[in-house]
Image (cartoon, rainbow, N blue to C red; front, side, top):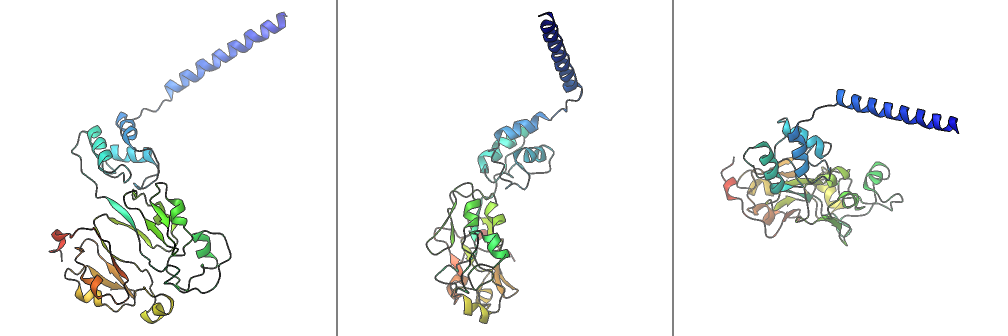
Length: 276
């Protein structure tokens, strides 16, 4: 009985001693943090998506507090969060330019020819790295929906033609779909841009015609007709400089392959008309 009591008292004393030691060590080695970092992190969405370019909301908060990142750098939070972050720092809020994902390929099951049957995991990266999928175009959408699976905001879905579709009102420009695509056919662009060259093929026009009915054939008609010089050719592919594009749609009208797409409801961006 006495032995038991002595043991309990000894163990209790040791536990108390260890607790005291840990408490003292915590105070001695405590790392002081900038209260602004905690305040910034508090107003962030907390999804840790990495769309800001940092490894999570805490890292972004630290970068903002140190001046290494802008107050409007959270794509998920948008203007509302940008205002709250600016308020924490006591600076004027700068509204972010809202961006959305755009899929630069229209070669679905109906437009892109098949080269065979893919027999493997339903994953774009694996298909691209192994058999290359079942479409003859080596640059176009594989159609296995890895981008849709990567989206945490229900901003994408696969349509009946085997192509991903972006729901722009849900898109936060977090960039997860961009990272998931092994063929780089998804990009983030300002929301008001309505003209897009939906092709990424670098093949010659002759080869493109053989594998896809809506691919760019490098005819350069779009380049010649663009009034602001927003379209240029690079590696057999027409490309858009969105900083110069005014959504005038001249290129859309002359494209023989219907590669250049216009999204109804997008505005003219007249202030860009003078950009050279």
